[in-house]
Each structure stands twice: as structure tokens, then as C-alpha cells.
Image: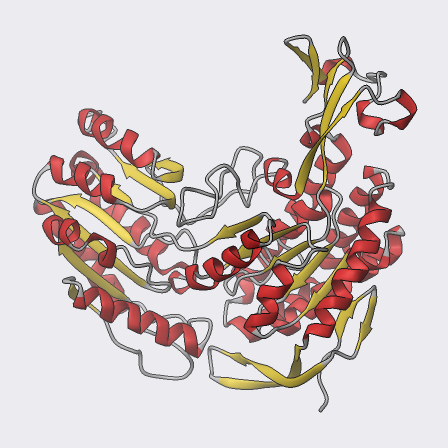
Length: 523
């Protein structure tokens, strides 16, 4: 059986496999020619063993070497951008321009370069020196990191190139990437550019490894393997929670980004001022990438009035007129359709859409649903189901108190947005709603939709459970995202020459250190 090779121990080699899979073009439904292996456990064992050896070597390497790799990898991706973007387009149905080549690929290389800068600068390690007591501590690499990439961002969140990858490498760890089976050839091309960068910069060969697919039971074994330091996962709540249980039972830290409905609250003064503008922003956000963003607004909250009805009419009209974009897979289509039906069963009314779209590929009608606040409050859990795709639920409240009550019943989310009047007429209502919403989300937005996630040190792409597995960490935003893949280590009375370089007495640039209670802290 002829199948693509896996990257283990610095080399492309034949996988240990019994079965294969093929990607499909979701825009046409066509099965693509290249076969990819479903690795047996032996590939996982070999990858973890090689990663352990690489981890020991990386611990002794200067951060500048790691930064050199990240920068070389970024250059390599840029040099192969045309081929990578064309391949990703074929495997995902996402447009080459502007989405893949002009937006997502530059974002990906930018975060690799940000990670390189953070590795060089070093403050992410939070070196702390209590010189009087001769106690020192810092964050150090945790060991091999397994990264599970999602289906919806073939570059920026890919296990072999995305934010988790960049953060894990920058903090000094080797990565075992689990590619997503919906874009395996894209992942192979990226892995080849990473391998070249490893060779160019002289990092240990197994710094970067990749397996395409695994049986579920082998995925659970992998995240709980004694040789794994930490795990990062972006994907569905069901899969994430299975991995979480296995990793935590083995004492392994695991960072999950799972489901989020990203509530958007449209206050009455804002709609009275700029209804058409808000409606357009909402439509564009809901339908971007066929709604397959982890920050897509799945829940719209409004007070009952004529402006709210006009907004829903405008949204429904454009949803009907705009051609549905392809979803990422046939499974994604069936899951979305099932999700819409579940919302209807829970009491939501279809305003428009609701069915599988006609034509080639995997498309679903742009779908708008609505429910009353009372329905939401009675069946809140069922109406908070994430529908991953081009579907949105609007909930209309009869009084401000109902809006507050809904916010109080929300599960944890990545984002929450509030649109308010520039005239300040909504300020009192904003003051009632914002504190509760901010406690339910990782990122609170004002007067903007949540779909954009800037690669900024100040960004939090995280949130309370079940949006993620831990509210104290972010998947985007370097250097903060790097600490997930580090262990805090303390050195008490250790001789100078035995200390990590960052903890020795010499403070090369005093301006980068600050004094706290008699201890010096870098950054």
C-alpha cells in the first residue's frame, strides 16, 4: 500500500500502518489522490523516544539557536507560499486570495517571528533572583510537546506551524505534531520546510516530528505517555475532553481550545444609531469562512423593539441571497445540520435556511434562528450548543433584566462583544451587563465583532471552561502563550557555575530587570 511518509527522528520514513485515508476537496466533494497512513502505536513510541533525546540537547542550546530556527522556518514558508496556498485551497476549499496567501500565511510567519524574538529576549522565563537568600527561579522547557491542530486554520493553527507549535518551540521544547486529516498534504509541505530549517540551523533532528493520523486509543496513549511533557489541542469539545481525561490521569498538563458561541450583545441605542452598519458587520462575521471560526458569533442578544426586528430582517435577507461557502468536510456538514436541528428541537425557530444546500461539495444553507429570552433561560444548555458553521441564533429579550439573566447563565466562551451607543445612551445598561459578561469570556470586545484574533502580546485567545481547559492561559499572544509549555524550577543555594545562565548574578542590562520585595525579576 503506497502512502505518504511520516517525519520521525528528523527523517521522512515509511509509517507503521495498516490503513490509509485520503483528503477531499470540500468545494467539489472530490477525493484527492494521495494516500496518507493511519500510524500504528510504534510510530508514536518512536517519535516520543526521539523527542526525548532532542529535548535533552535543546536544554543546552542557546535561545538564539532556537530563534534562528523559527526565523529560518518563516523564510522557508514564504519561499514556498504559492505551492502551500494552492494545496491548502484544494484540501479546505478556502480561497487562495485573500484568505490563505494574503491573510493566514502572513499571520503564521509573523507569529513564528514573534516567537523567535521572545526566545531571544528571554523575559518569558520570568527569571527571579533573591540575592540575599540565594534563591532563584525561572521557567524552563517542560519537555516534548504534542500538538493537535484543528481543521479550520491549515497554517495559523496547524500542529506543525501554528501558534501552539511556535510557543512550544520558542520555550525550548521539541514538538510532535498530529496533523489534521482534512489537510494532510498541506501539513506535509509545512513539515518539509520545518525539517529544512532544522538542518539549516543545526537543531536536534527530532526537534520537529509529524504523524498524520492515529486511532483514538493511540491518541489517548500518546497524551499520557511518560515521555511527553505537555499537550496542546484545538478542536471539538468531545474529542478534547477525552484527551483531557487521559492526560490528567497521567499527570500531564493539557491545554484545550474547544467550543465557544461568542455572544454578541446589541444594545438598543447602538441599533438606533447605526443599524445598517452593525447588520453588515454581523453578517460578514457570521459568514466568514462559512462560519468555521472558533470566534464566530453563534449567539446574538438584543432587546425587543423595532430596530431589533429590522436588523433580523436585514440579516435574513442577506443570508438568503449570499451563496453558501463550502464547509470543511462531509462530516462537518452533517454535524452542522444536526446542530441546527437540535436548536430547533430545543425551541428555536428557523428564520431562514436550515437545510443542506444544493450543488457540488459540502455546503449548508446560511441559517438564522431566533428564540425568546424565556426559551433560552428554560432550555439554556440546549440553546448554547455550538453549531460550527454558517448558523447563528438570535435571542430577543423583553426587558433588560432578561439580558442580564441570560448573561449569568452563559457557559464559558472565548469572546463576548457589546455594541453600545456612541451618544452614551446605553451606558447604564452596559454597566449592568459588562461585568457579568467579562467573567464568562476570555476577551471582552466593544463595538466590534469577535472573529479577528490579532497576534499581539496583549491578546487572550482563551477563556473559562468549556471554551478551554484552563482560564489562566492563552493560545495566541507571545510571550504569554509560551508559559504553557514550561516548568517552574527553583535553585536554592546552588553554586553560581551550576546555575542556568539566566539566573547567574551578572545582570547584563539592568534596565530589563525590576526589584520586587528584594528579588530581581527579569521583564
